[in-house]
Amino acid sequence: MTKHFAGALLGCALILINGRAGTGADSKDTRIAYPSAAASFIPLWAANDAGFFRKENLSVELLAIRSSPLAMTALLSGEIDVVVGGANPGISMQLQGYKEIALFGGLFNTFLFSICSVPSIEELAQLKGKRLGVTRFGGSNDFAGRYFLRQRGLDPNKDLTLIQVGSQDDLLRALLAKNLDAAVLGYPAVLIAKKNGLRELADLTRSGLRYQLTAFVAKKSFLAEKQPLVVRFFRALAESIHFLRARPKEGMAITKRYLRIGDDDILQAVYDLHVKLLPRLPEIQPEDLKLVLEEIALTNPKAKGADPAVFIDDRVLREVAKSGFAEQLYR
Image 1 (cartoon, rainbow, N blue to C red):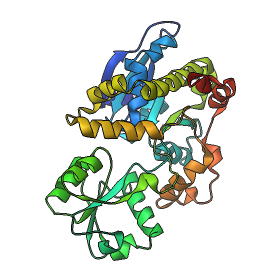
Image 2: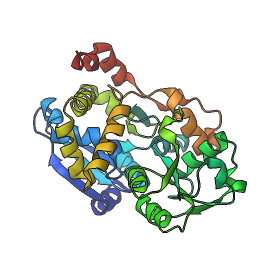
Image 3: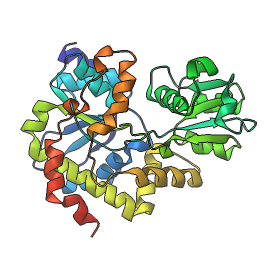
Image 4: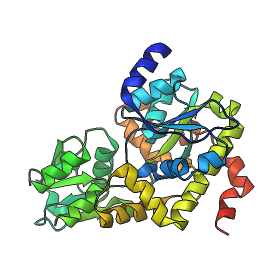
């Protein structure tokens, strides 16, 4: 795909979020794409709205691009500098031969899903013979549910009927209407489900499974040529994460603007869960990519036995971590 064509498609698919975070030493905007208004991206919003990008003399545009393939194409063409989303697309692109990109940071390294059911189902074993809904086959939601159930002695392909429904909202509506017996839900759908009398059978955030749910992807040339800028980007994110912990009232106001959750109890619960799970510094570890590689291996045999470390370029993170910047914020 040509750069011109990628740019044309990008213009149709993206939504500019709150414009530029500042003007300063970097007159050219750093363009950062993310896929949706999900709570996983609260630190980006806070870094923008609370002025931490500006404090670090960064000019940033946050762009919502709802298609991972399109976002990755825009990254390769130079239309986007950084893609923030699942680790799967970045690794998959590298396995396809695009060696110029790398994962260079991350936020959440666990499954942010729960398996919820109609009230009559009281434990996982009762899912046998029942209908389990997922957003789409092959997605992280689907993989998380299947993997967890196998860990608990259920074979998703034999013991249940798996149904691909669509969005989280579609899943929740189908479960509330009893068109499904259970579903793998994300947030805030889990909290809405519980508030409406549905049962949470399993909280995957407490499973102990490590899975890089949110990762930062960029070209290796960008990381090398713009290293001082990337250092300041991580400093801004570290300050944003500290701000979210230290000033929850202001952090929730920012979160509400993006998530548009009208129920304050649900907003509070979503906020508390995500902030609790955030690292002080957006680091990424090879261990957190092992399950992602298992997921990719279901459709691409090149992922089997691959060394997770080769997909990471953490030179900037190591520099920021060595400086002790994040730790100083909590003193």
